[in-house]
Length: 317
Length: 299
Image 1 (cartoon, rainbow over the protein chains, first blue to last red):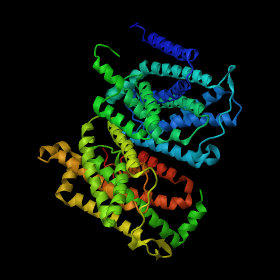
Image 2 (image 1 turned 90 degrees about the horizontal axis):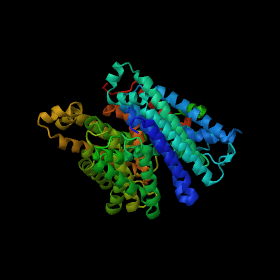
Image 3 (image 1 turned 135 degrees about the vertical axis):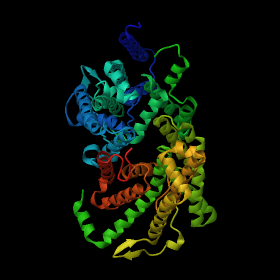
Image 4 (image 1 turned 180 degrees about the vertical axis):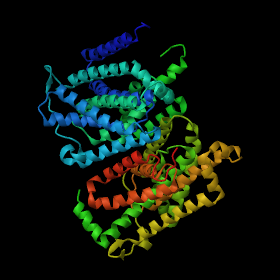
């Protein structure tokens, strides 16, 4: 297996997908299916952010912009045109990719701190455009009226089960693609930039171009997550593009582990599970979440997966 | 967009005075918060995401102190001093553990504090909005300056904030402590090697920053209502101010805060829906043309 990491990833992805798709055949649990749907969106969102943060060393505070962009682009396309769902989804992701390219072209030349702030500023600008362009986006009420149900290849996303299957397939395929990008020579170039940008530059890497590519790819995958989120809520809300949402993705990345590919997925799982469990017992979700984060940040000092990997040095990543 | 209204406003002195006053009050309160952010960043290289929490808690402490003592002066002072103390504890117990680690780890610790204290405020003071009310001495008809409405309390607030800006500026440039702080911002190792207790110095910087934010919260309480989460919006704005003015520059923070305040004051007339958007555009333009900010030093 050692010689074929790509095959191993493929096998793992196939097994996970089969298990997840098989679960409803044995046991129907709306809460679990709900969880997986939300996890699909958030896992893509957080993993795409980690392509920037963990792989390239670019700390973006405004990644939620592309999540929200994907959701709005998809929901608006579905509402305003007669396009089928896959076409609308691809169009939405393409638009998000273009937006990420434009924003990235402006941002990637700035150094770390300023990059974080300018991405935040772009996200907040996008958020204020959503809020103020009421005729198009419905303002702070969000885009209501639902997303029309149309079938894809004879497969209609009407029921929760269908949405569950669709989200699981998209998320696993998306993560597999991201994994492939991470392990490719391009992914290694990004890690080289993270570790020593001068050396990377001397070796002939055009820094801004590689960073812009990473930023655009990350935006595209966040857009896919946004499409799933729009399907789940059957609409789009400004909160998707607000900065606490970017914060959620950063938490997921940090909680799960910045140096492990599946870290952000685990982090997203922890955050969602925490949300579901804690809100059942107390209204003070923030208090509990804050204490958990503090315990992680000051106790483990790194994400869960990174911690496990360091604790078991015998196992390579 | 309603540029006609903006033009009409700029043509009458009454409207100009009214909007300038409201812009100045926003700007000066913002400056008090942003000064702490920029000071802490300048010396400790920590972006304090929990600074809005100091502002919020300062307001709430003042609210409670007013109920207990019935004195506005004592209320404002207790808000400021409580937050100076809180700043020291925050630095010693939490922030000092993440010096030198990843920026995101620092962000995580600060944001955890924001989440915790927003809920603590809900538990202690309740989730509903509180209004503190103006001091009785200022419940008088507003002044009319060139036809514009200026409530006397606003004028006093602007005066107090301006006074603090002057004291802060002079303190940093003239006193021994201020010079040490500025030296530590440039080279903390050297300052430490010269025998200055930098651990204490960092705590003092947090005390000053926290105290200023608490003071701003306490001063703002009669003008704005108190609610859990009120620290959030002022936090974003104080970051914008810090970035525009230049990270670490107090003078820059003052200028940028006044600019943001005035954009807000006049923006509510010219483009009420898009005031926030205008501010973000200003921030983006500044970051692109002068990443180090208006008054910042190039790294």
